Amino acid sequence: MEGEHVNHTRDDLTVEEARARILAGLLPLEGEAVDLPGALGRVLAEEIVADGDLPPHANAAMDGYALKAEDTVGATPQRPRRLRVIDESAAGHPASAAVRPGTAIRIMTGAWIPDGADAVLRFEDARLDGDWVDVLAAVPQGKDLRPAGEDVSRSERVLARGNRLRAAEIGMLSALGRETVRVTRRPRVGILATGDELVPAGAALAPGKIRDANGAANAAQVLTAGGEPVRLGIASDRESDITRRLRAGLAEGLDLLLVSGGVSVGDFDRVKEVLAAGGEVAFWRVRMKPGRPMAFGHLAAPTREIGVPVLGMPGNPVSAMVSFVVFAAPAIRALLGAAEVLPPVRRAILLDAVVHKDGRRHFVRVRLEERDGRTVARLTGPQGSGILSSMVAADALAVLPEELESVPAGARVEVIPLR
Image 1: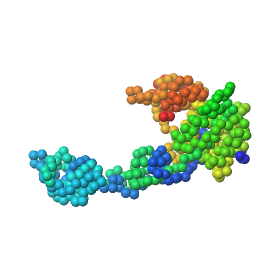
Image 2: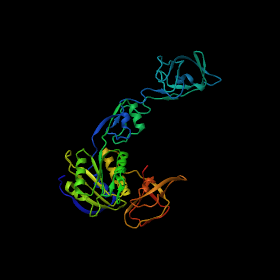
Image 3: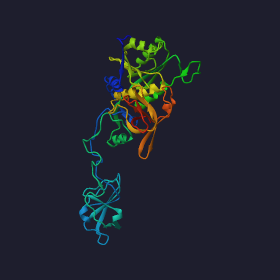
Image 4: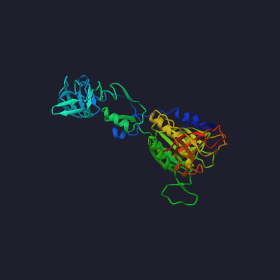
């Protein structure tokens, strides 16, 4: 992993400054064609323009009779107008005859409007008598008739590049005749947890050991954000072990690398030395809590002309997960070419007072509920960066600005939904 140099700056960055530096060089990955069922949740890599009208032909909005509106003028139950029924039009089985003056065609909801008809008379306003129908009410032109192109017209832009495809978009694509669609390739995101104290989830705990939470949690977050997680395991605090695992990951064609732990100032935080040897990486302090220490840069990789972007996050589980929400998820969305890369934000009333005196932006874990038409937020309990249960209980992260000394109960705050 020969590299160039590492910038050991100790910048004290705002969240926005740090995120802007991370996103600055991230471009959308290439697109790939997938079948519609497999496109659910993916990001659209092409613009969708309709090559025809939807619906392609005028159709009936109600069961009744397709006719000419002028043949119903003045019709009442006492003085009905009588028309001859000459054919039937059902969904998928259009009538072969055309409507002429003095005639009507029985029609079902969704069936094509026969040529010559300009309105639909509902069954409840008609009385059938053999091959004749008595019109009991006048109807205007266009009544209960859905015109061709009512939903989408030919040459209309239907979906924009960068849209995340939901069931509705999948249905629209199918209605437009698409069997496949181009979506952005899922970013391959390497995940490496570091620390002598970590053991896999299934291992017995020896004295001083804890089970790794970050590897699994970050992998789940990568999936949620739309990426493909590549687990690189747990590295000890030895430079040789960290280097070996990073080399193995970089050889797999990663698009982004996440490393948790080893980016602080401790004597055993060897990740800094490894990143220094392998690429161009800056170490920051970000004015946020949890998640102050961070690293970002690029590591040289055999399959890439430009190095693989690497994001170093704190080792405490809550810090790592919060850092992912604030920085890694937007990075993945940028690689996907998503129209919106920043975390979605809502507003809520904070029911608990929070003492906030250290000049950092706090991301506190809260439960959300609706009360009297308002969204309210309550702390999940203790907010320590090692209290993983605070994330389990959380519906959102409440964002407390760094310029506030404290936040009183009843304050209106921004929240980032987690569910």
